[in-house]
Image (cartoon, rainbow, N blue to C red; front, side, top):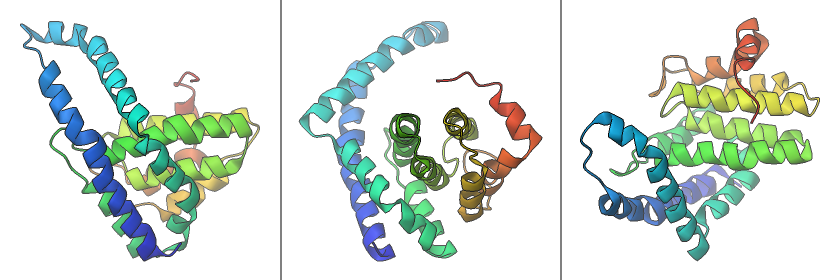
Length: 215
């Protein structure tokens, strides 16, 4: 797949996903919004609300599972991100970064994190195929700490652990994708993705993995 075809397909998915998820969610949120007497009451109700959100999302997927279609696109087109120029990778990350809806300001970054969590890492554990490690890392590179670096770091650590559980040494893939990642300070943190992902060859990163329980 050439870059222009990839870019146009990605832009199409941004629009379709916004229509599929963000707009229905905006109405769902209005319908289920509550007035809380204090912050504690709101926090107590979060689990219930998240459960309702998950049920609502599942109901949309039963009608048409657009996330699965987009996951398939990410599965088959991952190598485009590797082959294109630095400027074109920046353009890809820009498409993800600039995808906005008032109800879900970071909806494409959230979708990429879901892809890593629900697809790439699960497949890595099921198959032991390094291609899923690569796909997961590319999705994280595209997400580029767009929301919160702690969420991104969590996914990096879980991928690293999943690879080690399959008796792999994941450093080569981590370092390779780190070199392709952004060198600029991201929206959701202070460390550039190129540096955050490259921590795998340092004592710091190895020590950090110990603080995460297996999932």
